[in-house]
Image 1 (cartoon, rainbow, N blue to C red):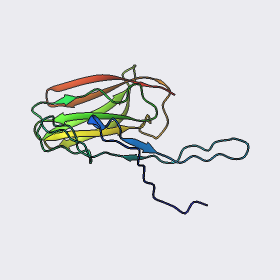
Image 2: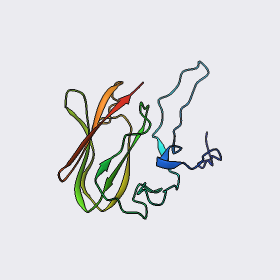
Image 3: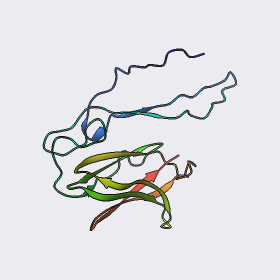
Amino acid sequence: MVTDTEYTDEGITIAKYGVNDGYYYVKTEDFAGLESPASNTVSIKTNYAEKGTGDPGSNGESSSDKPTKFYLYNNHPNPFNPFTELIFSVPQQSYVKVEIYNLLGIKIIALHDGIKQTGTYRIMWNGLDETGIQLPAGIYICRMTAGDYIKSIKMVLVR
């Protein structure tokens, strides 16, 4: 039985764009070597936001610098398994959609669909569809729409 509910990881270093952000989950293994499915994942964030870049801070909200244009950055990591981080900038309050599509153009999941204030934001995608089903390995498209701005990026999910 596990009684300790806290864990401090001294190996985390702070880097730009959340490169060293991490994820933790619990798996069990029995004496025969059979593994359980992973538990719910907990993400952790570093507190890095480089002045002058509009890079996101630790809470997924904007840093102290305001972005000057809409922008969807490439996801990181790419290829990914099981999670990838999407970062996007919004220069003024706007209605923003961030959606994932398969190569047939079918929407898999809407990661955000609503108003965002000025700032740079981060969203994590776990490779699941809207019903919580794990998607197969493959190429997926992330599309950001905000006002007249539309941008798509290619993401590779590996299993």
